[in-house]
Length: 105
Image (tube, rainbow, N blue to C red):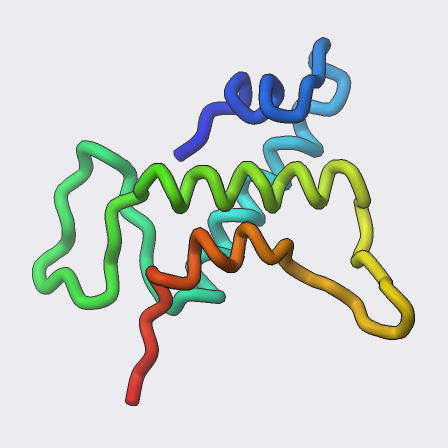
């Protein structure tokens, strides 16, 4: 849903030594989106399933949130601790992904 070259440009990474690590972050970011929002991502150009249910076609905001999260993981490579509070997801990613959350009542 985001190609490796786009992510590497975002991270300012040259070379291919860390390609498998970065691809793992890409996969994990979209898995995190699906778990956090309770939605199933559909790539652009793919049809929505019938019934669509909680499926959503990837948007620019979703993609940007993933890039920010991947950058956060790449830079820190562990949970960020401020005082005694661990931050699992950057606030900017939450702001971009929050409107897409699917909440069952």
